[in-house]
Image (cartoon, rainbow, N blue to C red; front, side, top):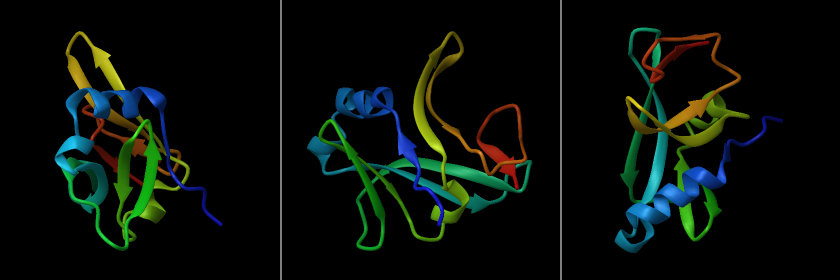
Length: 107
């Protein structure tokens, strides 16, 4: 059985800062074909769907669709603030390599 993805308190805190729940939104993490390494992450605010896995914390929600779930098994969803900018990041143990931008990976 695959472990579900985890969301850090820092990622939930950032969702609370931007008021995602007040807009009825959750942070959607999806995996799509494409990108420079074969797969890419699609990260956006979206409405939860009936078949989504819903991860909740601090009154916020992160959702993953059933197709993307196997690609994100055991992954950690975090929020990073660096000099070059702030963004949600995914630490994915299933990715054998990733590109420099961190949004594309291969398995």
